[in-house]
Structures are given as C-alpha cells and as structure tokens.
Image (cartoon, rainbow, N blue to C red):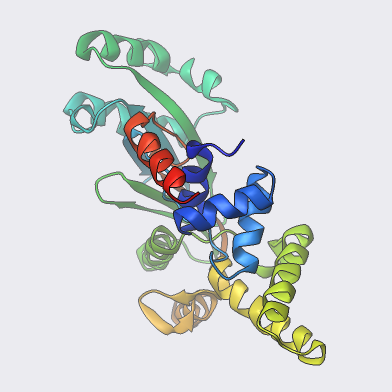
Length: 303
C-alpha cells in the first residue's frame, strides 16, 4: 500500500510533484530507491536529491585550534528553536566542538563519557535538560587532524550548516587557511557528494549511466548517439556531485580544483584532502499528522 507518508518522503527527496511521486511509488511497488530512479528516468527529478527533509532544531558548532592543526565539529539537537538560541545551550555546543577536536572517542556514547567541567559531557547534557525542561541530545561529531597542512571551518546561518575542510600544504598560515575557508563556504552552499572523481563508487556511476541511457531513449534519440549523450551527462553529473569538479561559487569560471591550483602558485602546493558537512537536523523526521492528512486527501482526489 502506498501511504501519504511515503509520497511525502519521495517528494522531499526528489522535488517531484505529488501525483508523479504517487505514480512512481505505485510502479516501483513501494520501493523508494526504485521510485527515485523512475522519476529521474522520466526527467522529473535531478541527480542531486533535495535535502528537504524536515529538520530537528539545535545547532552545528565547529572548533579549529590556533595552529590550524586540529578541528572538531558537532551537531547538538533540541526540541525547539527557542532553546537553540539559549546561551547555555550554545556554550555547551561550542565546548563540545572543542572536545571533538582532541577526543579519542569513536562513538557518540564514548564521546558522552568524556570529562567536562568536573563531570562528563553526558551529565552536562542531562543537567541542562533538567534545568530547561526540554529534551536534548548530542547527535554526531567529527575530528580532523592536519599535521601536514591546515584546517578551516565555516558556520552558516548561526549553526544551521557547519563545514570543516582540510588542506594538505607545505605551508600552514592564515593565507592557506583562508583558501580552506573559501572551499568550506563553497561546500556549505553546494553540498557535494564526493571529493574527487576517483572517489565516485563504480556502482553509483553505472547506475547513473543506465538512468541517462533510459532518459536518452525516452527522448527518442537513436542508439548510435545514446552513448555520446550518456558520457556528456556523466560529465555534467561530475560537475554537480564532485567537489573538485564543481564551478567555484565565488568565481564560476573556475572549478574548485582550478581555484586551489591558482592560489597555490603564490602560497605553495595545496591539496584538498578532506571535508565534512553537517546540516542541522538532516534526515530527522518530525511527526506531521496534519500534512500527511492533506497529502492523503489530495491523493484520493487524484484517483
């Protein structure tokens, strides 16, 4: 049975219309990934899935050490936007990001056992829950260590999005860090799926090619030019999904890799080796009974 919630999820992931989403799910017999492929084959969804899922509240916080060698980033969630603006809540988030830069924890539970102000991270969260009366949780964290380069961070919209970028560089100075920060701002804006073309897994690539083949045939193109179109669209896919191939947001005439290469002429060799992007609440669904009822009503009208 195709439910209203399934239709909503497919719409959020692809941006396709309600009835198109319902038809794709019906054709796919409820298989979400196959429904996405069907919509893409019909040209009704783009390669990049929309990050339109309903966000939980909270904040993303980052920390980079003064020598630019260590970095940390965390996502700290709460129930309401009001609490996310609370100074004690923000202080905890920033302190946790600093702990993340040096932690040896591998899991969130291990991180919560880290020492903090005479107690632990987990106990500090529990104490603030008791004080404010709203549930909170540390959702995830990441640690960067760049002994052969520099780390930079970028926070967008007061903690809605956070990014850490690591550059391998023969020099670690403020100019190099500025390049890393420009790349971090770009990542915040474009949300690339891969760092470089050689990191795109072959299974994903072959699936993209097959989708483009079906698209070309649906457009009535003859077989002798289908493969040429497929390769052209794969090139476009790289520019959409791969960080180093994307047009740089500050200067779209350059790719990100060309931007970094240009800066390296004056600052010494540089290479983007790692990035991580957190968006507050991504992938967390909140119950929306009224919206689901609205979708169900419209689905019934379309029968």
